[in-house]
Length: 276
Image (tube, rainbow, N blue to C red; front, side, top):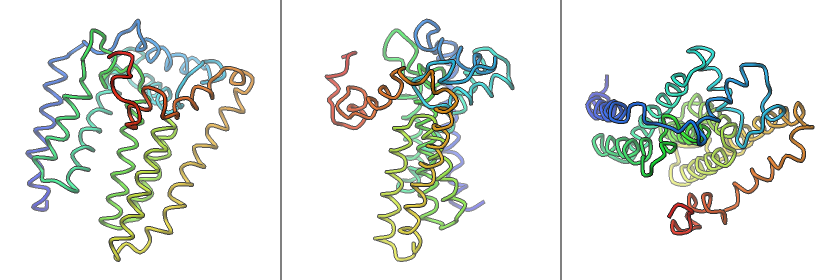
């Protein structure tokens, strides 16, 4: 184990301790089966019964999360515990990624603070009476999965710039592809962010010779693969999807003038949000 890795062990354990503490402190106070969370529970069960997403079930987001959670239910039973496990693993992965990405720029303890801030401020956010905005049992798993997969894509791209290992670039593309299948807009932001980072690395570092020619393949590959998956669902469920307004909703989610999308992008102030 290198000196850097030894120095990271205790900060990482502190992030893990924060996760365990927050799970204990908020135990079974996540989600709301009446508002949104019930949909996240029933959707995988419907898929396990043989129904097809978009054709038999109207759904606003990409197919990754429902089928991922259906896999958890297949393995661990069709109860809410499988979803809690799915959310807990995604939350732990996100905290670890916050730490790892921060380590490119910061020391181990400040990076641990970044991971802990994510846990306390975002993952276990409980700012109103409903518990639907925690990442353990959220109102929409695609938001949690999409964020984690996007961050994983950016992290692997940064690892490639540092170590120039092809495996890192392949993993970055794979995570971007999965992010597009979770939430299209999040996958697009991951592609854009990592592509800008790769291009910038090529401009400032002469020892990154393959960054520029890799960008088109890196961005177009995941996008084309995701488009084929969505086209497959369109073909299988064409009669049900046409006229459902599904693609109008997806397009609206990309509009920076909408409240939530604009708030994330910084084009709409927080005071415009309906809950303020």
